[in-house]
Amino acid sequence: MNIEDKELALLQKSQRRKDIIKNITIVFLLILLALTFFSRTIMNYTLPEVATHVAAQGEVSPRIRGQGTAAVDDPYLVTVTQARKIRSVAVKVDQEVKRGDVIYYLEDTESEELRTARQELEDQKANFTKRLFDGTLSDSEITRMRAGNYRSDDELQAELASINRKFESATKEAQEAARSYEKLSAKSSSSGGNGSSESNSTGTGSGSSKGTADADEEDDNSDDAAADVTTDGMLSAQSTSLEKKLEKANTRKIDADAELTQVTSQREKVINSISAELELKNTQEAINKAQAKVDRLEKEEIGASITSPVDGRVTSLTYSAGETTAADAEAAVIQIQGKKLSVSFSVKKEQAQKLKVGDEAEPQNPWEYNDDFHAVLRQIAADQSDPQNSRILKFEIDSDSVSQGDNVQLQIAESSKTYDLVVPNSAVRSDSNGTFVLVLQTRQSPMGNRYIVSRESVKVLAKDDTNSAISGAIGAYSYVVTESTKMISSGDQVRLADEVEREDQ
Image 1 (cartoon, rainbow, N blue to C red):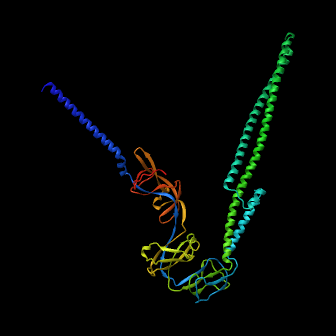
Image 2 (image 1 turned 45 degrees about the vertical axis):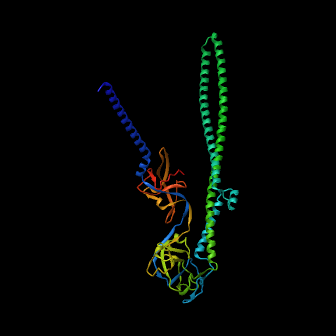
Image 3 (image 1 turned 90 degrees about the horizontal axis):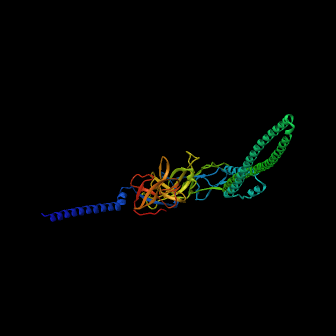
């Protein structure tokens, strides 16, 4: 092989090496590009997957639940809610009655509840009058509040802010005037002491010269005396100017102190007036509530009677004419026409107050019953095991799929209420630090949006089977996490279950 062939072989070998390096470089770059392109997808597969829901305005309908054993409802207990005196009995035992028939006529006299309500009303009125005329308010303010004209919180805040500004200004002026006066007073004391010393020294020196000097020195002493007179005049003029400044500073201090005293008194009057107005406003609201209660009880009592809530036969009468009923106690027993089933259970007094006789209930497990199922609230009575805090709800059951002895689970809805922030129950979480939700935050990056969850503390205002009304530091239309494939906490990055890109709200 000649030299040319060897060089050609070396050149070809070098070229092949370059081609290999180039190909390796291209493959490496393609791999990097692929990894970069698919990094977000690869990362997403490792992130927890979450489902979200928008926190928005909605309704929450809490339900009252309970269960009891179905029983043949032969007797029906008639009760009266107030302690009232019986004027006459309208029926007899074994008499047939229809729903709405009068059983007892009541005296038109006030009940113990009405007497108590009227006393509460009088007490509130007395408190109002006593506070109104305790000397805190001016005549114009008394007239205004007697007419029921109360200022808003914004108006009260503006008045308080105004007098506070005056008080702060007067306090600052009094402090500055005091400092100025003290400074000039100290300067005056220092200047007065030096002048007296110089005068005494000068007098002593002059006497000594006159007793010991020669006649040739008398002219020089005369010149010195003239100079002393000029110096004394200048000191006197300075002293007069200082005294005038001190007098002005003292006047300023007296005026500032007087102004501060006056503004302090005005501020105290304003604060007392605002406090009195707020108390009177609250008392007036209490009076209005007490008056409404009295009006309601009076309406119930005038011409009042106890009527039968069902058709049936009177089997027992508890009271006779002249006797006084006991609140929430049995007044009569009625045998209902036809055999009906009833279910009773106990609930809190506050829950019972949201219901009324005639409300319909539904089964908690409706799939177990036929479509003919009907449950109607027929009675609300005191629970004898806890009459102060509990009430017995008695429902009449009408259904071919219910037999005596069956356990029946009922639920009855309270009135729905609209709230600003409503989320699914699954979005509300709790731990040792309280109740919270996980809010989805969107963060933009070169590779697209990233989703981070953050913890926000909330308070549950109301709750039903599916939703919870909440309040907290989250905005309307925020996305809250309802489900996740893994345990997540505040600050974690997640991916969306529906893979839909969302923008920050």
